[in-house]
Amino acid sequence: MTEREEIPEMNLNDKYSTKNIPKIESPDKIKKDMDKTKKELEKLKNYIVKKYSYVQAVGILPPQSIKRFIEEEDVPKETEKHLHLLVIVPEEKLKKIPEVKKDLIEQIDKTKQKIWLHINTPVDIWEICLDSKFDLSSAIAMAFPLYDKGILGALRVAEIHKSLVLQKFERYVVSYVIGGSLVRGEAVKTSDIDVFIIINDTDVKRMPRLELKEKLRAIIYQYVAEASALAGVKNKLSPQVYLLTDFWESVKDAHPVIFTFIRDGVPIYDRGTFMPWKALLKMGKLKPSPESIDMFMSMGDKTVKRVKNVLLDLVIGEIYWSVITPSQALLMLYGLPPPNVKETVREMKKVFYEKEKMLEKKYIDILEEIAIKYYKGYEHGKVKEVSGKEVDKLLKDAEDYMKRLKELREQIEKRAQENTIEQIYKDVRELLQTVVGKKSQEQMVKDFEKDFVKKGKFSPQHLRILKDILSARAEFKKGKSDAHKVDQARKNAQILINDIIEYNQRCELANKNNS
Image (tube, rainbow, N blue to C red; front, side, top):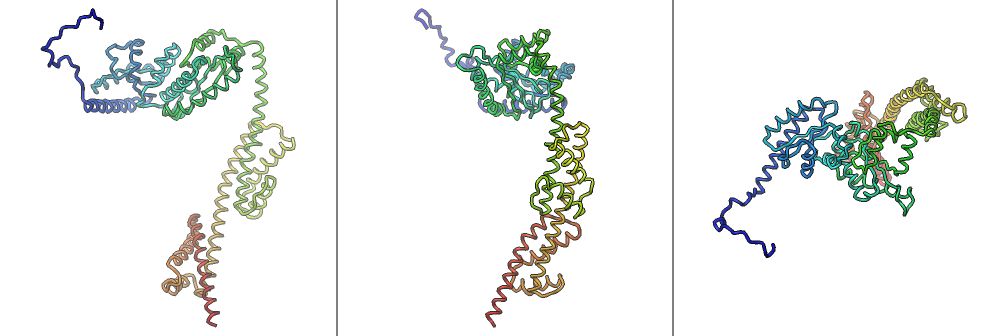
């Protein structure tokens, strides 16, 4: 206040008046109003999702961005203090928007809350980006999600990552562009988000261009995890970093990946570079050089050769090992030492087909065809390529073989369990006979309980173990195989066997001392 300014005259009658003092609401009332708003929003969200199952997302736009939406869209200025609700529907439901909007406005009126409704499609959002209205697209990305099938989360993680990158080295970033499943409208909560970052390397003087690229790439990738954590989503960013000069080279050579990127990509940050490329491509001004035509023509031959190599690699590197490794495992389960690759085919035939008769000839033929005809043929230079038809047949044979090996494993395990329980039974019975004498199984158990357990020479635990062994054996003989019960009987049998042996030794020692 300067000396020339006059102090306005005060009306003393207003000294105790409260009519000009703004009303301050109590914290309890504010909390109550907030809780009511949350409850109404939850009800509204549930109504939208239930009635319009195709809705992709429901969110609340950030309050600080509302002025910008009012300026840009046909929104009344008095809605500045309203909650602005964003609903995203698929592009194919565009014609239904007026009908949906009318219905939702009626529902909002019922809530008696100050809510303004925005209904957009993903294409509307991409148009905002393509118009370089990045403050609006940023606000949509940072909307608070009430419901999201993936699009809001994907936008949010890309927006946060972009902000971190720009904060660190904005002067180098020419464009930050999203693409892939997000732009195609296929993003879900676990989709990878493809982003392309173009770095200006034209004025770099202090370090080589490639060093700059690697340095910036390292920082960009470092921010990926941080952005996902801040966004609170499972979507993983997949950044691709390009130097501006290299990018121009790819455009000049009409590289298909770059053309697709320019055609389908949507910028969420651009310094006037990406959009001119997009416009030039749309006008047909980006044309390949004669050298690039020759290069891409030659790629056809290379592709055919590469496909043939891939098919051969499938047989030699994948299908072969898919039958050999499980075969080795079953030979070890049978009790043989780990066989080498050459021995596996011979041993499978010898053990499971000829000796045990557990495997049919059909499966030995499959193994021999894959391992000998194709793998050995490849090693000796006889097999140089395979057709797709051959690969299909070998894949089907390999699947059949693996299915049969799983059944064979059950057979081997069942036989092993049978041998185990019979050996346990035999050992325990023979030892028990030294204590109670040769008797029937039923009488042996009764005498053991009466003369040894009840008289304190053995504990009730020993009797329980004995009964468990007999029960496991009886069930196994009835075809009720229980690997867990057999294994438990085997472990506990050792306790009984050791204690019977010890008891016999004590008796023998006592007899010697008495004599």
